[in-house]
Image 1 (tube, one colour):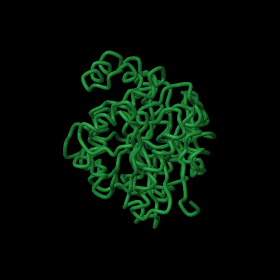
Image 2 (cartoon, helix red, strand yellow):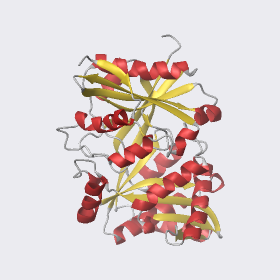
Image 3 (cartoon, helix red, strand yellow):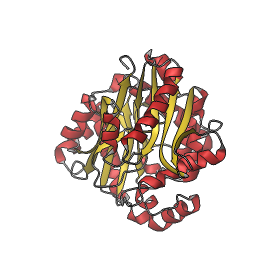
Image 4 (tube, one colour):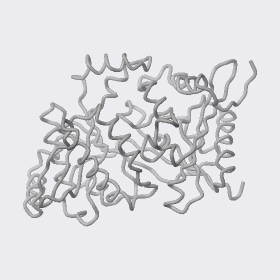
Length: 378
């Protein structure tokens, strides 16, 4: 069979696109196989509400019937409306260590977004900034935690040799329980609780109506707290409920918390058990295999990922973030978990970076990069 670049058009093509990821990590001990059913849902235009305002086109480079590379070109119309941009995105990139094949893949995604009127392209995002984001550039010595990306180191050269430049770096912080045991930090967060009458409550996962109300609260805080951030796109109601439904299946209720000041919701935090520590054994990516490993290896989990922690703007810089971190630390230790990853954090989010390094005593242990390429001089 000839070597060729093809567009994914059929259901069989889509399955081949998804399963091709295994081709690039055969001997990589840190590779966590995705659950195939989850990937299908993520890419399903009829099920994922992201595609109500976005378009995607998938490409594969085939040689002798084997996928040697893949990529997606993505148009996020909501992003361009909010940021007044003419930018496209690329995602789901995988490739053997061959620059010529990588260039063909990049060109396919670039040409697709150019045809839609874009003047530049940014990525990787899979498929948006609210999903898995960035190319791993530092920290290849350990597996990714839940909902974070992973790739071979040579991907950096494939991107940069194709003319991609750094747009923004994202940090992942490692946290242990020393901050939670620090007397000064404990006093600080207690003072904040008293000053602003902070009460912490859990998201109600058991009562259907209360859960709906809590999701509305989380959506309000999320969209309010993150709106100034670079690249942020407010999630639609459908997207938020789609995400909440997924996260509900893997969330630990005690680690989904809302901070209220005098009864008003002002912040929330969500930490997820790092189920990648179980899924790394699910070599086939099957759903039944994932369930089996989650049941039999749950006790191996020794880390949580702080996936979201935010405070609405009028209550920022008052120390409420410290209360939320402390509360997650206390609740994590009750579960027998003494480590956390806080990710991802924009490199220029000075308030959060300072809080993590100075208050929480955390250290950056992985870095991810979002690349960008302008078509202006091409």
